[in-house]
Image 1 (tube, rainbow, N blue to C red):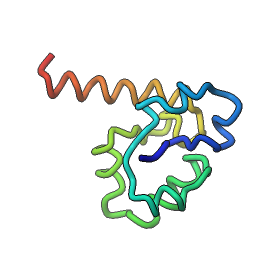
Image 2: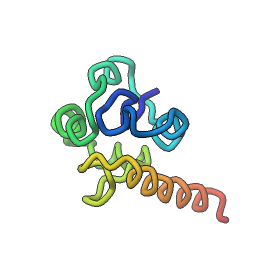
Image 3: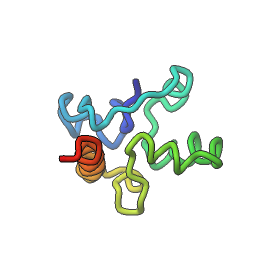
Image 4: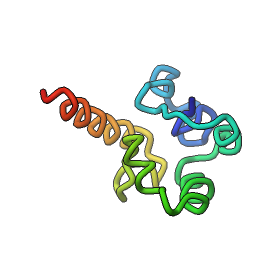
Length: 102
């Protein structure tokens, strides 16, 4: 289990409650080694360093499959946690409606 905005990243530490940081919207699943290598880096850093450069072939697909917004104003690229939570919540809600035909 991985916090997309890590608990100790400068984007969230001391700025948001544990409930906000531990929200399911801020969670995705990664192998233990990947999670540890990210440590407390902000997403704007590790999405380039750890994800895109090492996995260019599947990068977009992996983000889409994990319902992680990747567009310019998604909150990922400027480490805007609140914006990211809103944008990812929209993607999750859209997928739930799509799957349940609601």
